[in-house]
Amino acid sequence: MPPWHRALALLIAGLVAGLGWWAVYNRGAKLVSIKAAASSGKHMPYGSTTGHALLQIITVAMGSPLGREVAPREIAALLTQRLTGWAGITGEEAKILLGCGAGAGLAAVYNVPLGGAVFALEVLILRLDPRSILMALASSCIAAMLAWSVLGDVPQYHIPDFTLSAPLLVLCVLAAPVIGLAGHGFARLTAAARKNMRTDGRLIRRCLVVFTLVGLAAMAFPQLPGNGKGPIQLGLESALPLHLALALLGLKVAAIAGALWAGAEGGVLTPGLTVGALLSTLLVLGWNLVLPAVPAGAFALVGAAAFLGVSMEMPFTAVALMFGFTRVGQDFLVPLILTAALASATSRAVPLVQTALANRRAPAPEGETAI
Image (cartoon, rainbow, N blue to C red; front, top):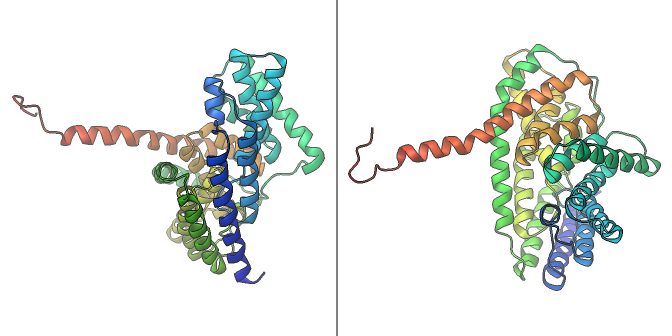
């Protein structure tokens, strides 16, 4: 493909994204998120939600730097809400089923039955009673098995035969705080970008500008467009040189934040995995310069899961998803869980440290002496 084709495709994607989401926000019923529907029982509007999901799928296929994983969850949640309404199911049971439906949508699209169930429990249902656990597991497993007839029972990513080693575990412990801080910063960046998006005519102009810039960058870096599956696969195969990983990391973060600021919609699950894999590749390549070598792909796998867990505040889901995405050996659950736990603990400590520092800098009340 000639490089200018990538730029043209992204320009068209920007036009589709801008006009499409402007129409959704200004001509359709107000959108209701899955979390809002699960927590409050609000009804997700059929037309706006369907258009919202279709736009995500179309723009990601055209090169949007965001993920497509929100779309199947939204459609699954919408259908679940309609079915529970027809069946006369209300109250807490309807909320649990809605969460199970959204998790099942994720499980079916990515063939991650355990990941879909854990996502539903950790992010949407927010409870671990036996009934909720069984419902989430059953719905995600059924959805994944039904998808096998179309998509086949294959993992999302293919990996070499990694082996657990002492240097890898040491690197996981030492690098986890760095990943935790980076994931925390990435979450704040994407939240700020979403907060500053606009739904008026500026949305169209912003999408055109941002997607065009991504397209121009893609002329030199063809791995940049899309949700990031390509760079993740390269990272897992230890096929990313230092200069390419560094360039893609900066460009990918800028593209994701820019697209969200512009008003485009999509998930940050796969993009978050991409950023985590690129960051982890840089860390392990630096480690390998002076210390006992660690397979770059092995640490990219572990670090990507930890980064995702921090950036989306779902460490259990991140571990389950990466385990399902790659079907890595069972012994790799040790570094996966260890790194995710340490990285999440680091991220959760950031607000506490900031509060403590702010209190130390605050002047003592008049009439009191600071000790």
